[in-house]
Image 1 (cartoon, rainbow, N blue to C red):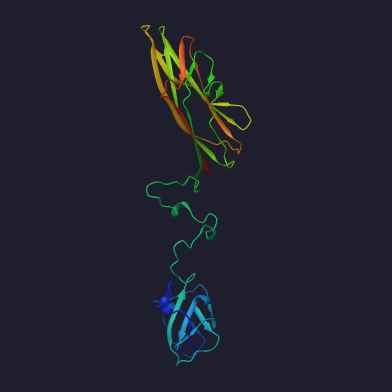
Image 2: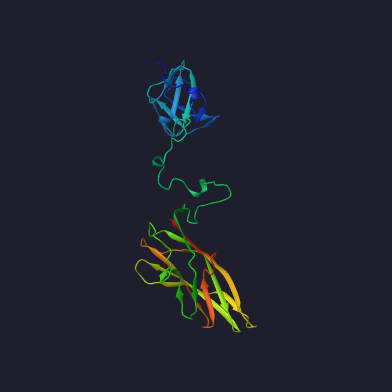
Length: 278
């Protein structure tokens, strides 16, 4: 029976082996370019003998092929094709979905995003799960040497917060805080700012101790005003799915100085919190 199916000229991912010369025996040596060839298996071979395609009626051991019956010396080997893991066809656009990809199937080496790599050092791919941004324009004067929390309104502490979706997530923190100092009376006025973190219903712990936010020097007794934007960016690993809170406080170094958050109508402070997924 002749072969019925797609044209063999349309088969891709194949190797063309040397034709066999039959001599009336059942076993022959497979070769490619006159070099012994070991096929993946008998199922990977397609052979045409005297115009009839053969498949499944032979076995292989190493480079030796053995037919189920002897092959007459009068028969002719038309061609032998060895195909690999399958027939190559053109996959339709969008046909490969997420479900068809195995877990961890795509590695860092297979990602090319121009000059920027978003892969983490452990070979996995981190991505931003959420971004929350907070703005505060509430002006607040401080005339005390005690640390006083930054407020979002009178008597209400400003607490930017984010709730991670996983305990393995990290939090990328960026803040830009508007601070000012005023001193009138000689020597120096200085404000020092602290930055705190709290997880869930716990207590605040200081992350940035006694950061010198601003300094005012008044040697003539005429009054000195100094403003400064205090900013930083760093990564946190809170290991929680509870809300994570942040806050700021500031104190003056002496009672003769006045320190402030967001002094003036155009002054604003900003905090951006980003969840970096594992």
